[in-house]
Length: 104
Image (cartoon, rainbow, N blue to C red; front, side, top):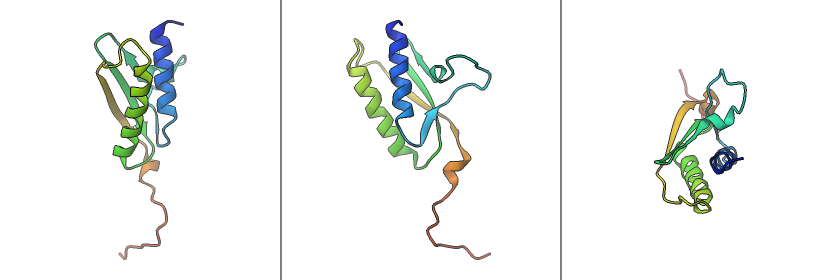
């Protein structure tokens, strides 16, 4: 496994470790589906996620911290990282029953 492949695997693991996020991958891929959510180039890294929960800022902050921890262990700790939320799952809008009801 090359170092880029290892880096991508560790970044995918970071995404999967955040409850409320999952790797966003194209539907037609048969192999290495989750790895398609990360592009690691020499100029920067792009991570594509789908959100299954709200609010987004705490989820993205947690992911950003985990990604920085991974990158600190590489030879490019300061590489620019872009996280793109490509989907918002309908389940993210399901509210916990708080007892509040609207009257129509």
